[in-house]
Image (cartoon, rainbow, N blue to C red; front, side, top):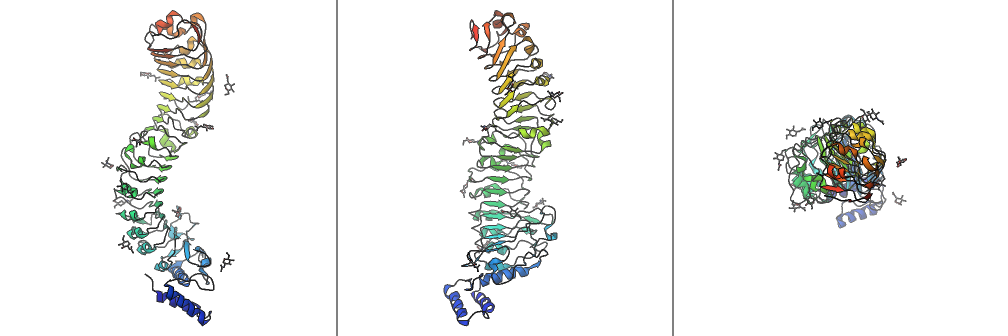
Length: 537
Ligand SMILES: *[C@@H]1O[C@H](CO)[C@@H](O)[C@H](O)[C@H]1NC(C)=O
Ligand SMILES: *[C@@H]1O[C@H](CO)[C@@H](O)[C@H](O)[C@H]1NC(C)=O
Ligand SMILES: *[C@@H]1O[C@H](CO)[C@@H](O)[C@H](O)[C@H]1NC(C)=O
Ligand SMILES: *[C@@H]1O[C@H](CO)[C@@H](O)[C@H](O)[C@H]1NC(C)=O
Ligand SMILES: *[C@@H]1O[C@H](CO)[C@@H](O)[C@H](O)[C@H]1NC(C)=O
Ligand SMILES: *[C@@H]1O[C@H](CO)[C@@H](O)[C@H](O)[C@H]1NC(C)=O
Ligand SMILES: *[C@@H]1O[C@H](CO)[C@@H](O)[C@H](O)[C@H]1NC(C)=O
Ligand SMILES: *[C@@H]1O[C@H](CO)[C@@H](O)[C@H](O)[C@H]1NC(C)=O
Ligand SMILES: *[C@@H]1O[C@H](CO)[C@@H](O)[C@H](O)[C@H]1NC(C)=O
Ligand SMILES: *[C@@H]1O[C@H](CO)[C@@H](O)[C@H](O)[C@H]1NC(C)=O
Ligand SMILES: *[C@@H]1O[C@H](CO)[C@@H](O)[C@H](O)[C@H]1NC(C)=O
Ligand SMILES: *[C@@H]1O[C@H](CO)[C@@H](O)[C@H](O)[C@H]1NC(C)=O
């Protein structure tokens, strides 16, 4: 790879005038005896061979409008902009940080950006033998229509290689698979003047230390076993395969090796299959998952059951009419494009601690039929749902921390068949308007602080009711004849389950009560101040 003679020659021509001859001799001697290529000059500064390599690299940069390499002269290349050496004792170049920070990489084509370096990547960089970190991103360093140079695969000491936003064409050089120490590899790019692809990424498997991999916008359409290949790199923590023209994510992995994977971006590919088949549901260490912009279908709440680390799930433009997610342990933030969310028919986020409520105000939720938000630690008062959730059939907000009273407007949600507000801290009385919900089959207001007297009006219209649970409140009935009068209006109620336990009910249970509930198989009126039998049937 290197010619020691050449190095020695460069060395001597550079310093012959400034150093006493014996010193030069000594240095050359040192060079040859140690066999090392880049000994530092005794005067300090960087290793001359590496300085020369950097100067050759600079020569390859033909346009530098912003004069970013202005400091690249003088003996000590360790002081040049973007160059970092091991220490000033040994002076080996460890880092080359020439990222184009200023460019607006999403708007200006890189090669028209004034802050970009333009030209070519000189193979002289191979002389930077100790180089660990190279970031050339955002520069125009590949001739139009040409490919990333494959010699980069010989820079064996690299831990970090960032070639993102460098316009180039052709197949990503598989030689990069020789960079066995690589921890970070970024080849991502989204410039229309660039077309990169890979038809085989098996070379990635040689990168045993790889933690961060981005091939964003690299066309991988010909590769179907990409999950299997990634699964062979257990060190991976971040994978960015956004917009890679991938066809499907339904491959089955018998064993998930990616136990360190935290961030996975697979958005904007062409997945068009059942969402629960995706291989990544087995990557239970994931904290961030972006699967936006796809045509998934099906339900996936079971798929999520083991994703206990997930914190952000981006489903923008990927949702269908049903979203069911249960049992997530964390405070998941769900990102979703509003239009996409608002057209949901079923939203089931029970048990999740999802911070979705914050986003609800943006929608009119006309299409929503079912809203399941049980066990989400929601606080505050019940919002006025009347204007927006007009078609709701099921509303389940139980087991949250809701306070305040039950808004009478709920009585206008006339399609409701189930209203579950149990296990909150709701107080005040039960609004009479609830009695207008003629289709309601299940009403659960248990375990709140509701008080007041239950009157005829409350239940006048609840002709479909099958389950009624008002347990553990402070409810009373009017003593005597008015004990649950509406139920007397019916010959026989359909109610099969009745729970009025742990309230402030007093007095005797009238005969009609037992008649009215003769169909009920499950009655609990225990823990009240009733006389007579408390459990029956
Ligand atoms: C070497 O490092 C020391 C202390 O960090 C510093 O004082 C000195 O200026 C450095 N020498 C060069 C040539 O950079
Ligand atoms: C590579 O550089 C780009 C900016 O040019 C940056 O956005 C990206 O995060 C870098 N990649 C890595 C792995 O650090
Ligand atoms: C680099 O990789 C290529 C292709 O993967 C391979 O043919 C070549 O032998 C490798 N070179 C070295 C020096 O390892
Ligand atoms: C990706 O490559 C395939 C051919 O390999 C091509 O048909 C497809 O159009 C490419 N995708 C994009 C987005 O360029
Ligand atoms: C995966 O999806 C592809 C394309 O969507 C389909 O052709 C293939 O049959 C699916 N495979 C499995 C195992 O579901
Ligand atoms: C990864 O898992 C597969 C099974 O899917 C197994 O055959 C393989 O040995 C594992 N690879 C590594 C690198 O752990
Ligand atoms: C979740 O983990 C359990 C226990 O390992 C397993 O039986 C189940 O199939 C997993 N669920 C999914 C969707 O992978
Ligand atoms: C209800 O819809 C209106 C617009 O129709 C909107 O301003 C309001 O924020 C929405 N509220 C909820 C809770 O969605
Ligand atoms: C519920 O929310 C309260 C405050 O809003 C917070 O202090 C508490 O930790 C939360 N509980 C859980 C289980 O997230
Ligand atoms: C609830 O919303 C409906 C429809 O937007 C409106 O007519 C009603 O006045 C609201 N009630 C309260 C208490 O804000
Ligand atoms: C009540 O249920 C019946 C039968 O399912 C249905 O036809 C009717 O539209 C429902 N009423 C409302 C207000 O949704
Ligand atoms: C309900 O509780 C809230 C505080 O949570 C309190 O401000 C309000 O006065 C209570 N209302 C009734 C009717 O008890």
